[in-house]
Length: 112
Length: 117
Figure 1 (cartoon, one colour):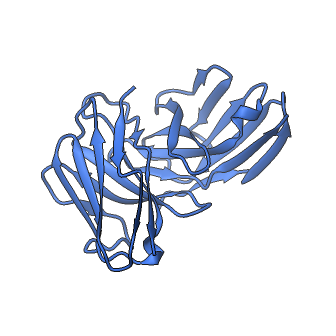
Figure 2 (cartoon, one colour):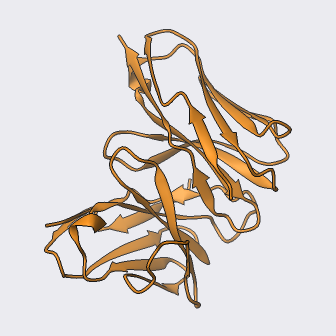
């Protein structure tokens, strides 16, 4: 059974810091990986999708990498801002079924 | 990007009643849609896979008779919570990958917050 783990569960940093969120998974079957942002009481905002043939994706201050050999993905946020405060979820996507298995999320607080 | 809508966004109902939640893909067709549930301060858990024109596939531990799913067209899936109880209060979110394309990128609806009193 696929398990997705995110570390840390919570993170508080001062504005301007660079930070790394970690995601690991147990099943190495063919998959894609997607990072999301969720604001309190809201739905999901897709940040980055890494397909199985890719190693990383970048969007603005965000960079997500994927290491298939170790079953890990990281989300790097550069020059963090208070507006980045949210819960970040990674999801493993089965290439066969399209099902997503989510991690528990990392709740980020960026202090001004 | 593709848009998925959900209706209603928020619903309060009395215990014992049934509630229907709609999930629509607005600008693409989706033969498959997924329903997730999120309890407070927890992550999203997949409930079921909704397949257009056929029966839904439920995850282990999800009662199919309680959570009725109907995927009547390529753009609409409905989730009906039957005989709702307070423990069914949760945030329900649907997602859909476009039928065309192979990226399996998921597009999520904005969610429906159900409160059962």
